Structure formats: C-alpha cells, structure tokens
Image (cartoon, rainbow, N blue to C red):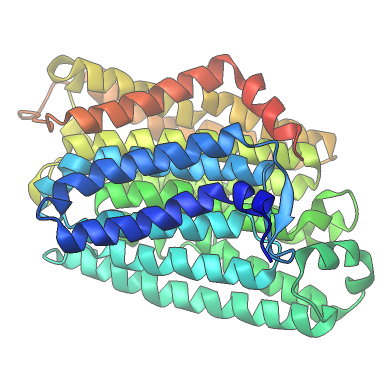
Length: 474
C-alpha cells in the first residue's frame, strides 16, 4: 500500500510521468503539437525542478525500499529538470532550422529525464538498470533524430552499439553482486560492504559495474564513442548528452557506492579511479588541442572533465562527493551555455563549426562573443567564475585525503586545457573575421544561453550557498 506521504514525496516523478502522457495526447489530438510541446516541456521541467528544490528536506525511502526521495536525490532532480528546461529553450528554433521539429523530440527528452530521476533515487540495482535503459534508449534515438544527415545516423548507430556493449558489463556486474551478496538492495550491500568485499566475485562485480558506467561518463579508455557522437548528433542533443546525461551516470555511481565514501574500503578501488582520472584528464586535454571543430573540441573537453570529477570520487570522502555534485551542477550549465552558443552560430549543413568561423565575432556579435568568453573562462577554471570553484573543491578534497599528487596532476591538466579554451577567445577578439557571421535570431535560444551564463556567474560569486546545501544532505 502506498501511503499519502509516499505519493507526496514522489511528486517530481509524477509530474514528469503525467507530462509524458499529456504530451503523447497532445501529439495525437492537436494539430499544433509541434508548437505546443516545446513550451509545455519547458514549463513541465521548470515545475518539477523547483518543486524538487522546495521539498529537498522531505527525505524518505518509498516503494518497498527501492527509491529514495529528498536530500541529495532532489538536488539531482533539480539539476536534471533545469538542464532539460534549458535544452528545450535552445531547441525551439534549432529544430526548425534543421527540419527536425518533431513532437516526439520533446517526448523523448521527457522520458530520458524520467530515467535519470529513477537512477538518482535508486535504492536497488534493478532500479538503476531500469532508469539507465530508459535514458539510454531515448539518447540513441535523439542522436539520430536528424534522419536526413548521414553523420547523425552514424552517431546514433555508434552510440547504440557501444552503449549496448557497456550495458553488458553493467548487467554482468549486477549479476555477480547479486550472486555474492544475495540481494540487489543498495542499503543492505552498503551495510555489509566490509564483509562482502572479502569475496572476489563481489569485487569483480563492483569493478564491472564501474566499467559499465565508465562508458556512460565518457572516461578514458571507454570514450571512443564520444567525439563522433557529439559531432554527428544535433548540437542541442549533444548538450543534453554531455551534461545531464553525464550527471545521471555519476548520480548512479554515488548512490550505489556509498560505502566507498564512508571512509571504509576506500583504497580498494582507488587505483582504478585514479588511473581513469589521470588518463581521462590528460588524454582529453592534449587531444583537444589538435581539434579544429568546436564540437569535437568540446567532446574531448568533456572527457577531461570526467577525469576531474573522478578525482572527487577517488578521494573517497563526503567532502569529495560534495565537490563532485557541485562540479556536476556547474558543469551542466557551462556546457549547456557552450553548446547553446554553438547552436545559435551553427549554419545549415554543419557550417560555422570550424574554429575560424569564430574569428572577429566580437565585432559582429559582441553579446554572444562576451557570453562565450565567460563560458570558456569558466571551463578553463579561471576565477572568479563557477568553474574555478568546482575544480578547487575537487582538488581540496583530494589533498585532504592524502592524494596531493593526484590534485597536482589535475592542476597540470587544467593548465594545458587553458590553451584550447582561450584559443576561441583570442580568435573572437584578436583576429579579423574571414567571412560574414550570421547567427540565429532565436530569442528562446539566447534566453537559454543567458540563463546558463548567469548561473555560472552566480555560483562563482556565491559558491558556498550551493555547496552548503549539498553538504547538509550527505
């Protein structure tokens, strides 16, 4: 029996679930579904996101201990929904430009967010798997939503094949964990972690589980799908993959491996997380330097950022986890702003994606150039923007855990990444335009970018407000 307080606590899920049904009915019975659904989805995500934040203190476990609500779960709900709302804003005119303004585009985004929310609140390994598959199937379709474009179809197929391969690792890992622990309950596994960790089958299961999610977070060497998928998929969809999709994967890792962050058994998987972190940071940063396409540069940048976030997990403390959640929130808005600006400048047939397309942009589109400069400074980790504090909290957590060497490597990687981020700024402000720059006159797209940049500045000026909220529920 589901009690009223349980229903009250799962209202964010009910809002999104009901929204999906209503969206399908709008698509079926309304002739203006293509015009209605973008804004309906935007307000749906906005309501679910802010409701999650307002009810963050309502912590409970519902559905026979399979789903948690409130606390850090609701913070993730907020990130997912506000991120998805911004993607909807960026997509309104972009989808029209490419002729992909299908109603199902927004229904797929709604379904993917529902899957993410299930992952973030999961108290059972089966719930994580179910949420992951709902999200992933939607992502595979969204990557190839532009059916007229060969690169989009290729991106969708690559994402599907490698995603299915990664899911195999995940399912086998869950099977081994269940076989050794005789339960899929995350709480029971966490309580008996020290006992189970003496079983080699259990440890292999956890390792395979981590490998499966290493694909989803685009960590080296499981990153091979990222550059082609990010380049081939529609730019707004790429923004979705690289932000809240990655946040969802990290939320599942945090929800599952709570025992690793309690100070016990941390050293078991430290070598794995540290090696993944180092290679992801340096591979992403170094290879990004060689790119001339801005979407591919941001793809490799995404790999390096996964490395920075893994430093926080390797720290194995609640301070590290708090830094990870803060980083994920900030990274979401930084990358959404970056891909939003790329979507505004991008022309038909993938034109204006080359670095040289941004030359002299400060004279032709001074506002967009200023916004992109702020985003690049933040991604590079320059103070006083939010990107600086995101890295600062991660590195401090590593130092407190005795991983000073890993923090130093992270700083070196950050210094390397400054080159390719500032390269865009130099082109915009210190090089003359090679041709006419025509960007989309999209009010909704510009609004989405402006809100993202505003949040980057606010989190930079008041980082403690968000970090304190996160820390109070860990």
